[in-house]
Image (cartoon, rainbow, N blue to C red; front, side, top):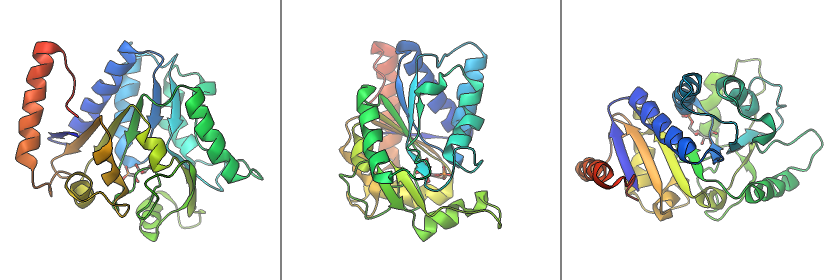
Length: 268
Ligand code: F6R
């Protein structure tokens, strides 16, 4: 894993934005895996700003979101479809027919939606870069602790903690879903490259378990230790419980100098 610790959340978004933009410049037809949630908002703002400045285009990009609530229509402002429209899709030149979420229409069988989603990802040639956040409990996508490390897109029940964490976004009278369709852990691991962003002290324990803890289904993000190309961007607060911090900073310095000398852009 390449672990990059930056001073604050804005620097994390700026670094992530540059990484995604760099990829889109080299491969305009990139297949992006997207995440929703609070952490990614600043990243999407950066990407929209770059698009407005004429630096990047999404015209040939295909996107697959990690997850979508079950029982929430795309028109519902709480859906992840609505979130993506609001924060990214409505502001860039992406072809709406190439934006996918694991959406389950009324009356559709969610089991079939999961299988179909996997097929769509394969048909697009697989995911080039998967963007991830991390839950306080170590989830990635909505793969909650105890999820099979070999899982594929399917229905998951959110933990009480995840429901509580996300309740800030729902008013008291609004229906808050307890179920979601999510890419599985094996689906995420199939991505050719992974970029995980985590900011804030609340994430520090999960981040330390993901990077320095044992590989366990009780911290689904720990599976990323097995992926050959993961970049983790952290602010100081989210990095607060890492024991090996000095090594990560040292490694980042070496990668920067490799990059300057040879154009190599990462250390796995
Ligand atoms: C959202 C998702 C989740 C979030 C995670 C962090 O699509 O897949 O895994 O990335 O819950 O959420 P925030 O950024 O709101 O703390």
